[in-house]
Length: 281
Image 1: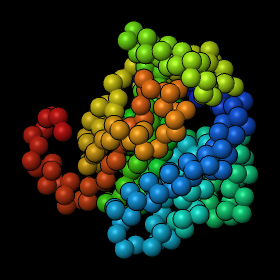
Image 2: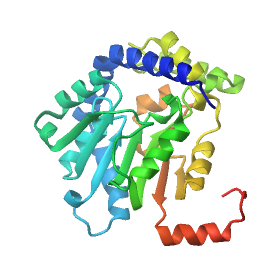
Image 3: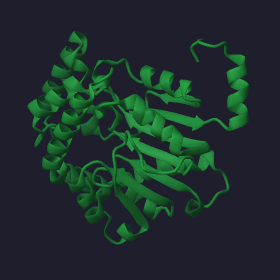
Image 4: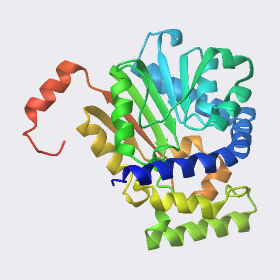
């Protein structure tokens, strides 16, 4: 899964170029989510999961980091719910869109341009780390997860929503299912999620992305457990958060949720004593 330093730099630049060009179109997708029932669907889910982890705590006392905020959807939902929100993205154009979309809430969100694989925050800074549709696109997802765990406080919560995007580039069965998705979109006359997307450019990037080849979310869960997290995977979360059009467009690539809690120091030491050196966790 390793890239050379030179290749990683080129990969990052390819991503910046692509997502800069895509910023306004992707922002329109977030604007639609904010203007429809998706705002309530996602907002209630996030508040529910955070509230379950921190019962009795006021939102203003909970620091949330939205990594790969893009046009700001999660950051906006969290700010309007009263959380202390920081939102980061690698692409300046995305952050401009996020500030615009946040409107009056922009002053309640700390926006920072930052690499998800090299966060410029002190350790144990945040109570919650959120991400959606980001990890698949990273040059070094293991480094990213290590950073996310580092900036979480003990007992902190990671919620990562993602999917096996572009698995079809390496798997014949997935390729056939992907082709069927495209046919279903046409037959059922729903809006095509790939409209406005340079598919060739995105596939070129995905072919270099390490996670395109991995079986997910198994890969993610195993790594996070090694990093000292208690992990639960919800493979059916798409049933709660996706619209009918999203389900038709992406039937072969269902969204999953990785919910992980950072072990407190004492619990981590106990777990380490129970696991022999070199054993899988």
